[in-house]
Structure formats: structure tokens, C-alpha cells
Image (cartoon, rainbow over all chains, first blue to last red; front, side):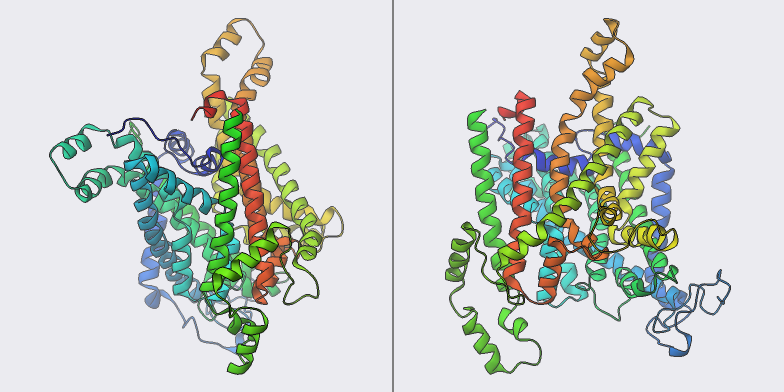
Length: 311
Length: 305
């Protein structure tokens, strides 16, 4: 067994972009930060809002006052209820085809959450596999995987995703798969460095001495011990995927009409934003609140996960 | 230091080559280019003719090698849509994207570093909390929506600045704000964490013990050290912003590289798409390379890793 630590061949600047961004690992600063900004209220607020979003997604058909796809040309661009000309029939107004905005917003929760969850799961499997192998074996394996990570980081994600979505003909499924295949870098970077820290831990050494098989060591000894960090990355990547889907759909290469993707709703309202600004404000705020909630949840979980972070 | 630089340059070159392979293969294998170019109404015969005319019937490896051979001398072929070479298009649009990226970075740096320092110095006060709220909000804000909101507020309602176009400096203010805010949270937090760490270090205590005044300690000793990782991050963020400018350019109708790429994608103009992806990746690679070398020059510990 080599004890010499493999050199981190992932470009330091590139990794600092990730860790400087959101990765908490070496410094629990962000957990301290959040705790002070929101106390544990941050976690509570995030948890409540995310739970609410999940409930809305599940019960959308019961909650929505109208059919989100039903067009009513006679009632186009009805303003929301707080506006002079608004009415309680369409609480958040209607869009250019007379579809009820509130109903589309509620059903849109399903799209955002599905994309966030499934894309983060796909990228989690890819990134964690790469990261754990690199961290555990070190040496050549680490060199190759770190090179793959460096290459992935240098690819302009938005452009590549746009081009591929356009070629494969954007649909909900292709967008999910694409984002899952593109967004694994943070999982890989984090699981690599956490695994590096524990590959010489006593329980891993003990498992090796006992003659446990490699899959057993990786899945039963290493994985449970890095799960905490992975859950934190998972929430951040969910938020990332949701924002990227909205961006792709806004640019017309993501989820296609008539699906009520929030990014698509902003795109459809763009032509009307000068005189009816609420058509872009409403789906934009929904997107902002959901992403904020998931980030708050992730920061809160990191708080609990950080060593000595419980007090 | 010499070997460190040589090693990093070699890695950078091979990463660039790998990206050129990957992006070429991804574009060529994820769909049938000839069918996309021909459009939905083309007959099978027309598709076949396009396949032969554009050289898409040859083995993919020889197509790639041909393309790479050209790319090494900055010859990316001709655009399928415009009557001009890809290089001319890129050279034409590049200044706008670079201006936007540079302004956005300048804005992000000039906000995030003072704010990060202030938050660290006034730790646990309302200033600190406000700075962190600013960061949390920035992270959750979809950049295209933030851009549109800026247009509605400053171009439509207040009529202070133009909403679209790229004729004068006024046209770059709103896009630079929209793009710059995206890079601010990470840099601000890194400055703040760095400052807090440095302020607790022994050499700052020594400087204070020597009787140096607060301001001199903070700016001469602390900030200089805390800012090293931020400089590296700034280079990387600039790379990200150049890639992300496709969104902002589309929102503000800026005719830069991002808009060129987006137009090319919707028109199946693949030579342009490929070239822009590679150029943006090259910018990122060169910027991270410079950041790593600068870091190593400032912090000798990095070189030995």
C-alpha cells in the first residue's frame, strides 16, 4: 500500500472555483455563516419550502383551479388579482393563450423538481464513482480521473448543453439525461477529496486486513462515511440543474411547449414584459424561491454535517 | 518553478485537445447532422446529397483530423449559413463578449472584495449579515430573469439605460451587472473567509503588537495575503462568464460570441458551434493556467505539490 499522497492534478484554480463557490469541505465557514444569517431558521425555512414544493408537485391536479393546458382565447393576458382588472377566477392571471398562470405554476413545480432530482441522481452516480475510485486508489487512477475532471471543468456547460439539446430535439427526458451527464464534476471533486482523507482510516484498514472484497470496502465502509458530504452536494446540484433547465428552456432548447416549465413561461412572457411585467415576474419568483429554498436546505444540512456543527 | 510551468502547460494543451475531440464527437454522434441541416421537409435524396457535399459521409476520425488540422492554424472552415469563414465571424464578435466579460469581472471584483473585507472586519454585525444575504440571493437568482428584471426597471420604467444593442458604453451597463452578480457571491465569500483566517494569524498579531495602526495592518498585511486565492478564482470566474454570456447576450440582444453560438445552434451551423465551444474552452484553459502559475509564484508551497 502506498502512503505517498498522489499529487492533486486537478488544477488548483479550477477546484478553488468549485470550493470557493459552494464546497464546504476544508472550511466550515459557510455553515457558520448561514447559522449566523438565519440561525437554524435557514434550515427550517428551506425544509418547509422544499416540503411545500414537493406537496404542490404531488397534489398539483387537486390544487390547480384550472387545466394548465386549457386555452381560452377570450381571456388572454388577464392580470393577477391585485391588479385593478384582476379577478379571483384567475388569481395570478392568464398567459397569451388564456391559460391559467397559477395552474401552470403549480404543475411547473413537477417539472423543476423532477429535473433537479433525477439529474442530480444521475450525476451523483457518475461523479461519486469517479471520485471514490480516484480518492481510494490514488496514483495512476487518480491521475486519469483528475484529468477527466479538469477536462470536464473546461467545457462550457451552457453552450454544450444548448448544442446537444438542440441536436437531440429538446424534451423533458433528454434535458434530464443531458444535465445528469454534464453536472457530475462537483460530486467527483468532493467525493475524491473526502475519500482521500479516509482511505487510511483505521476501519478501512481493518476491513482490508480482514480480507473484505473491494466492492465491500468501497460500498460498505467508504460510501456511508462520505454520504453526508454527498447529500450536501446533491442539494446544490439539484438547485444547479433546476436553474440550468430553466435557462435552456428560456433559450428555447430545453423543455418544449406546451409543458409548463418555469423557464419557458418566462420566455413566453418576454414579449409582454414591458406593459405586463407580472408575466415574467411570477414564474421568475417561483424559480428564485425554489432554488433559494434548496440552497438553504443544503447549507443547513452542511451545518449539521460539519464536525462540531451541532451547537 | 520552471518544471511546474512546463508541466501545467503540457496538461493545458492536452486538455484542449481532449475537449476538441469530445466536442467534435458529441456533435457528430448525438444526432444526424445531415438530417438536421437538410431540415424537416427534405427528401432522403437531398439528405444524402448534403451528406456528401459537406463531407459528412466520410469516417468520423478522418473528418476530425481534417478539422483539427485546420483548427491548429485557426482555419475553422466556412459557416453553413453566413457567406464568410468561421474565423472572420468569431473575430468580428469577440470584442463584444470580451468587453462584457471584462466589465462584469471588474464589477464583480470591485464589489465582492470590499464587501468581503468589510464583512470580515465587521463580523457578526448587520453589515456582515447584509453581505451574506446579498450572496445567498445572488446564488438563487436565475441570470436570464435577473437580466429581464433589470430591463423592466432601468430601461422601461426609469428609462435610464438602453435595453438592447451594443453601440455605446451605456449598452454594456445592465448586461455587465447581470453577468457580474453571478460571479460575486463566490468571490465575496472567499475574500471574507480568507480575511477572517489571516486576521487570526500570528503575523497579524505581531504587526499589531509592533504598534502598527489598524488600517495599515489590514491593507498592507492582511488583505495582500487574503486576496491571493481570490485572484485565482477571479480568473476562473471570467472563464465561466465568457461561457455563460450566451444567456446574457441573448437577453440584451448583444451581438457577441454567445449570440453567434446561439444563432448557429438554432440554424444547425455546426462549424461555428464547434469553433465557439473550442474558443471559449481555450479561454478558460488559459485563464486557469495563468491563475495556477500566478498562485505558484505567490505561494511557493503550491509548486511542490
